[in-house]
Length: 335
Image 1: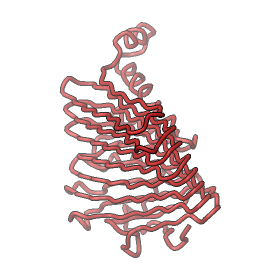
Image 2 (image 1 turned 45 degrees about the vertical axis):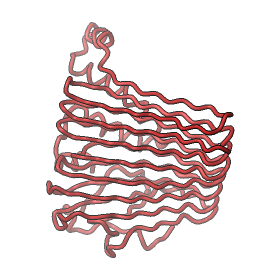
Image 3 (image 1 turned 180 degrees about the vertical axis):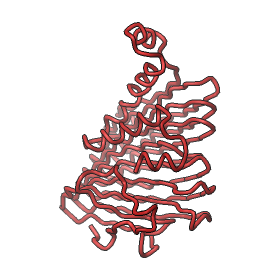
């Protein structure tokens, strides 16, 4: 991994910003207003061939009031043959400007490489953040990714995954928590180009007030991609009558020896379960939160690191309990 990209936070960032999310011993890279701290350049990280990285790398992207203009960011992560590493990608806003950010993230896994990635999105209600993920997976390589959208005015994730060689695999999950007038869109395209590849996607959302969520998922199996296994799910929990969730799972299959499925559901809190908990002395408000947490854990359980899973679960619970609802309190609770 390129050592020159590792920085300590500058003192003029919120009085010495320290993020509490990363794992013990992890290393941090700061992206300030679109560029690597200290250089302003795009981020380009390569993980060396055959090397197993024990420490996680956290990339913290921050928007500040010093640069309120629209920006475009670029981050590239290249896993060379046989390498293995964990990434934590976080985005924050430190002011309530109407920020508009266009993010471009490129991830390439060569043969036999493995990547374990957690993405946390935490921005205020006036922020718009569109991120395009372009992912290529080589022979025998594997990607595991969890996207946690905690807060943001308009969040748009456009994810394209290309399985380019046999025995490539990916497992991508997402959890989005939206209320007020927030809007989250997840567009996912998984392209099985060759035989004997596996993919699995699970996206879950909890929506309140007049929030909206959109999911569009496509599994594309090319003509020669026999022995493909691909599964896709999207489930939403609606807490109010005005919340809206739209799901469009799609299969486009041009091979005949495959195992593929897709599905989507929208639902509300289970009244029978709420009644049971209340009959056991649990207040209604607490029962509602517990049911939401149970719904969310299907995604949170996908986080490999117990320490990181515990931290993300804590942030999720605070968000569901309404303990932070704006930019400044959100960053204080997360970081």
